[in-house]
Length: 313
Image (cartoon, rainbow, N blue to C red):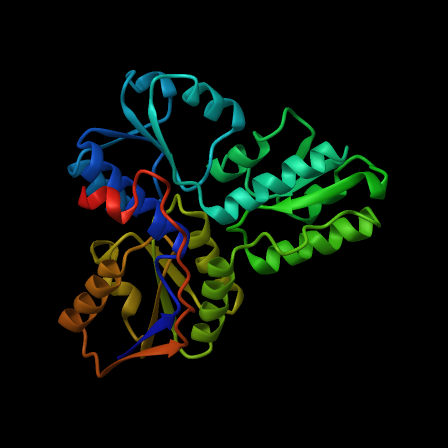
């Protein structure tokens, strides 16, 4: 059996920054550190931070006065941010800067009097956070059928934004439908789908041309991870979504000559290593290689109070 690892895979810059914010907050302030929602959607990462003193909450009322609070990488509605900042709390915002970009777009479009359509998945925390940047005026669509069901809006008076982790191919179909239904619809200056989401989806398309099965490492709650599985299936290659090597069913690999491995943007490389070790231990692995090119290194700055100098002090 050959094992081929997709490149790029795993942590993106926004996830790296979000996890580092929680780790540095623990170093500076000590446990417990309260985090609004899972910092990223990965069970391994969340469990590790829990062991170190992070407490994940969904309601701000569960955070005691005087505590330290971190907003997750997905962002939160403006009303919740204002409520949190009105209290005696030390707050660090780990919202991905690329999600913040979409927040700013929504506010700007709203101030221009536009009706806003968001491409995304209902109930996802990033979508809730983005829609919560303004008081109403946003409709959500997930597919072309949703677009067709929208009420007519004069083209020049509407605009759209996208969740950063949607499928690139799905988004293109929906955008084409929006352009057709609402000629003149205002578009973001640059695609809202983040670079890491697109790069990982492109890597899976490449991987699918070279393997019989793809193992996608990440949590079922992770939007970008689910999209990687869907991309593989669309290329005609069956994909299995797993949290770790413990979830592998040996029966999946019967008759498989080449297996591909990728990981969602919130899955640590240690999980990839674990899957490779499992395959080597249980199958006749003749070769392990990588396919694709490494991502250009991107790094987002830490918030004030968690700089290197703060850690050293």
